[in-house]
Length: 318
Image (tube, rainbow, N blue to C red; front, side, top):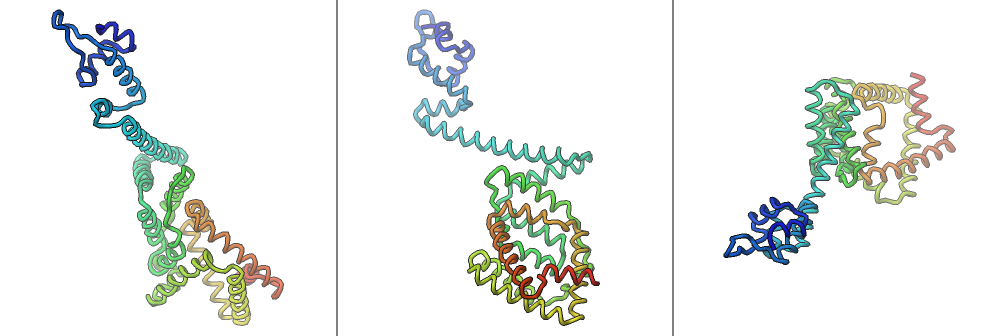
């Protein structure tokens, strides 16, 4: 059959048929007498298959490899599906970045350019890079020993895996939030309290912070409740009978609140975002809250006041 008939049977244009022939996807014989190409039913089947695969964006090179027996149809389809999923993932990341920029309503082109670059890059970070990004940002905001202590409080929960769209959105919000925080000046009174603390003590604190969190996640909750209750009661008795210690605690509390407010951390946004990004941190917070509520209730029964009320009273009296 000639090319006109083939075009009618396949729905392909003559130009498309000739193109597929030039790419080596079909090889019709030539009539020795009139030199016209003569197509067979096999060519029709091939052309219909080619047309169908092109509809779903299978590349010509992949189709050719399959027709030549170098690749399987399933393998070609799977490879194309992987590329499509990758493209969808990239488009989704781009959508999130654009949405974030729109919501911020930025007008400064320099700021927009920097924001787009930062947001897009952080979406590609590995787990280790995400952890490093958050840690280094906290160290930048809180210089010196104080920053190391802050990082140690969150370090066990910074192995962030972004495996759903909600987490991608929250990760970008966290990146924005951290980017907008103000650096605490090095001589802030709150930092000076531990500025010259011995490095060994810093390391001891970091190790204890890590172990305490592991205990909460993996330990006996009932036992932890009693231990914290005992510690809280001891602290209450120690502080309540020492005016000088009360004064120092109030001063440290006021300085810390001032520092956090200046940095832009006077709310719990960081913890809220981390709780969504890290299931471990969310579980830790839930267990920790349960323990604290138990301690507060028990202290109220035994002392007529819980720690929260006690510390609030100290500050109010200062």
